[in-house]
Length: 311
Length: 311
Image 1 (cartoon, each protein chain N blue to C red):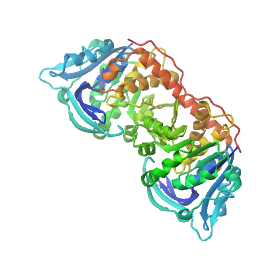
Image 2: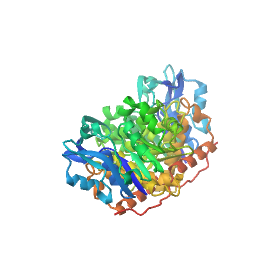
Image 3: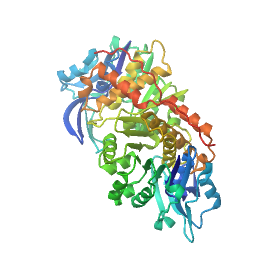
Image 4: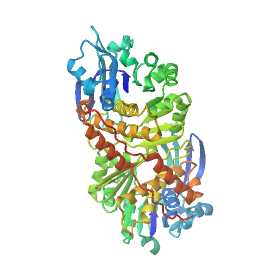
């Protein structure tokens, strides 16, 4: 199996209560690839500017990720995001977004990228997501992320892509906004009625929930005392989730596989937030990932032990 | 075993996006007792006014709860709370709080109430919680709830009571505020260092987390499409949690017992929010509770199925 991801490769300027970085490697495709590369071959599709460093490109290529479709635009500037987090990391403010080479991005997928078995459309303009989706006819499983900006400004296009993918991965607030349904379960079921068979609601520090036609599953985030920088946690989650799915898509995606995918996504995301940007996941080991999935199971497991109740 | 709860018995005026009630039975002690009475004998301690109805008193006495220490104050007015919830029920505004008979409340516990094995100090002024705690020398397990008002205005008194109880049950935001620690796990461990052996962080629609010296457990809320009124959900949770604990306090409270207590608390709270005030839990059956605990286990359970990861 192989996975193609299309999305941003970026420089981020980030300030959290625990420090700051002036210009660190970021972007949804970067975080996704660093996680998904644990599971399968990953092809990254996205543009960077002339200012993008070889060292950063080497990080994107960690664990064998293919970077042949990372297009370096002559004279262009790499996508740049500047944000700052509040004291409990629960809120963040975007101080600047400079599209740079993303402003004129026209995705052109090479043969290996377009022949991937699994596709992840990271958060970019929905029409671009649709173009990439159309170029990937071989994909047996496709998932997408999006954001409030596109729900506000390009909802129709976004719904058009959602109708074509198998899985939607959004923050719970975005699911509510997208559907106009205040209840999370109702919102998720509304999205299922448009076509996808899987909806994942990311809930930040509270974890994530999985909704399918006949099942519901929720998993808390892994508890950490040291959270340094949440940037990229959602894309790292998606990389773990979609990566695990890619390894099982051939034999079919039962409920247990999707739940395990949630656990791997959650474990990977928990490492991501322990340090700035992609620093932690870049040097993460397979053993660490497995161990944390085991811990996630232990902290969520309980035996049923009914007691007699007064009637 | 028997349980004593001290706290408010109230009339609530509540508006949610799904309707309103002008004057319904409420109060922390009411909601706690309705849940805890499934597990054990409950003694309710608290004042009501001359305006308090016999029908409402009969509801407080559901499933055999003792109301001998519900003091009806001649000429007094029952505690009254008026609040309104936002569109997704995640936020609420308090429009009025009239203390009524609570303004001059001096807890006087009868022999059965003061001899209880388990004590729950619902959210009242911390000095009153301490007086009740001192009258209950026989309690083998005591827990308390509180709120931002007391953290703001009576923090020293509150910490003084916390040092004396076994278990603290607070919203996660209150734990952060109480300790000044933005990280939930750090905040919970700070509270453990003051004396209690168990901290429960209520997280509203996201569920609840349990922190002890050597264990962490988190359980999502039960997913519901129909949430009508969250009022009393936290006290209902506490009633289920403390009730289950009361049934096991004699043989000792291991990690699994506390986790099962979390499940019972979560199940009971999920019924509470399905209708206004205490309406649903008043007519709830034991079978319904057991069934929902079973469902909670199913929606949180996953098998570990490690895959080989790229190194």
